[in-house]
Image 1 (tube, rainbow, N blue to C red):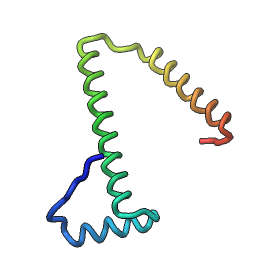
Image 2: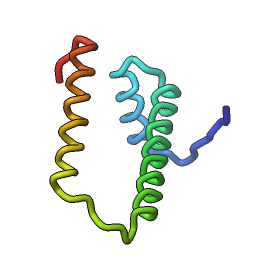
Image 3: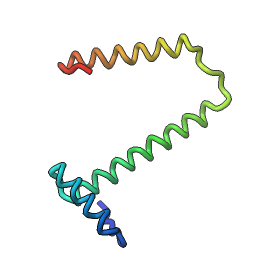
Length: 89
């Protein structure tokens, strides 16, 4: 694992972040690590979306009826999974 040093953080900002970490019962370090990880996940997803958009550029669009059918199947899969796990959305 790498270490990161952040300089020149405003005292007000740092206090706000410390408070948010405490509210979650987390240390400042773990809170910041989780925040950095969440940002990295977001950036990876954005890159994947951009890559997919580039691959699909110029192709014809999926008809609305097919799109709706796929979304219905995805929704049904989510509901089935929730029932299997004993959790309802």
